[in-house]
Image (cartoon, rainbow, N blue to C red; front, side, top):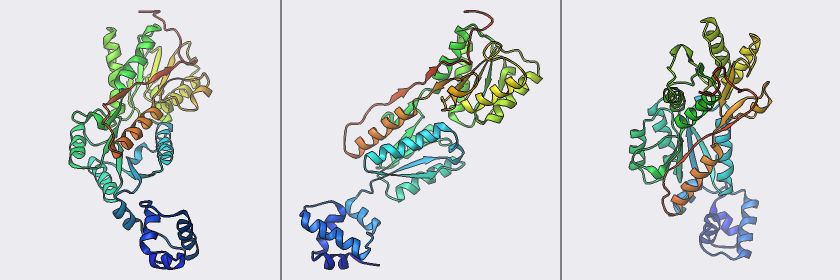
Length: 339
């Protein structure tokens, strides 16, 4: 394997000049720079990244921690795709690390990225508590930003989507259309998003003096088959409902299939609403009404804030994002008219 000294001899320059070319620090004439690049190509030299990083005190890498149970679905595909693209535009590399199945493993994933000398870390937490994340941020000099959780002590380090408010607004839309018997399929309740969307459903009913009927709340875990199973369970127990809210679109699609199998017309007999506005939503029959979450905007805000921190810019206050209901064919007037 070629060494930096061999590159220097081949290019007819000093080792220091080669180091300046590799690090991008210090002036090197264009003529000498081209000789160094030519020598690197001819010798097959590969720079020692660790040594370069120690010298420059920057790796140009940003770490992202997401537990592997969240890798499926368009929401997280969009999150990872835009993270990689936006960091590429900033000349930085994205490193994805698995947060696995516990708070301890999420903590270990963050430490792993810091040990790799990532310039900053982004975490979409599932298991770490708010207090634990506040403590982790306080313990490290490198910026650690948190997506979709509201921190108590570090406003500038969290980018938060108000899932409960967004869910409540969606259910309120159904109530305004004249629906009172509204079924709900939960997401995983060990997920903050799952718990907050369920809380929003309950809050909307209570706000409009509609009793919460626990028999209309079905457990789900984000997958289409669970949406179909929830409809089967509701029908088997003889529940009456004129609207159904699924905590994500995959489960809503499963619910649409089960309703069609029982020849229940949507939206004439049951209105159906989902979350996340997956690419398939406009193409279901009927097309699915869904709440679009501002994933791209949240990632953009996260990366802009992180780069600003790394560049010594001013700290930016927490910004709260909300979803937008995209009305399509799957919702319509309910049996009660306007309440």
